Image (cartoon, rainbow, N blue to C red; front, side, top):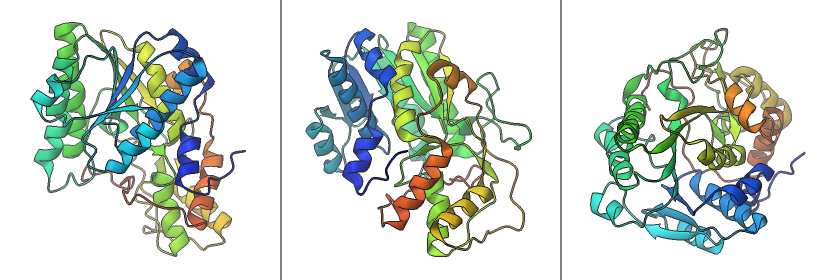
Length: 343
């Protein structure tokens, strides 16, 4: 059983604990690893986990984080952890072309929050930056972060989407994410680049995530949105480990991998359990929970990497403890309750 971290430093250490399989992979994987868009919600702890895995493996391999670093604190955190950093605006073709060549790349850059009313910026970040990147790094092995939102909505009775399901994105954010995949796919067909599309939903960090978005209103005595009745989630440390492990699976034609927890979680049951843990009454926004959801089937991921190290039950407990002890929030809701594509 994991002990709830007392502050962000402890949380980052917990999130960056390297999976044993990742340590072994670092002994096999040739070349350095660059994480593009490293300063986002997940990238910092991914880079830290990669560096810790390299150190534990006893091999010489550079971990490089690339981003604009509009928040200089993220750059400092990475460098203190032994991760090299390069400032680069991935929407500037000249800056991208000036980057060194990297044999292994995890591409995490993208825009979701604030899409509504700022659609052009979202499309540029999610489609134009991939074009610059794919052209520059045509000879690299690449894991491309994507989202389960490219799939059609499903009811809980239907179960989650599998990798062979055809995309059917709703709204401009989801459409732009499919555009990101298609742009990378175009360049990999042109150059033979090895790629894997990493369709994730949703990562749990305690400072943000679907469990945070359910737990916070419970703690504050506000109504919990149940317009979306079911969801999937995965501990961010597990998601990061699986992204790095996926470098070995990158192929041409590209592979697709759904990444999430094995459980289909009920929004209402999750909220009620958090209410029990926190000693709070729970109220919902809707008389009946909605039954159109973004749901992914993670069977292929589990076959490849095993079940996540942290279960849904433990994640719920950790989230309740984090919020009740005053743990910080990064203030970026997942919008898990949105099923009309308007983020």
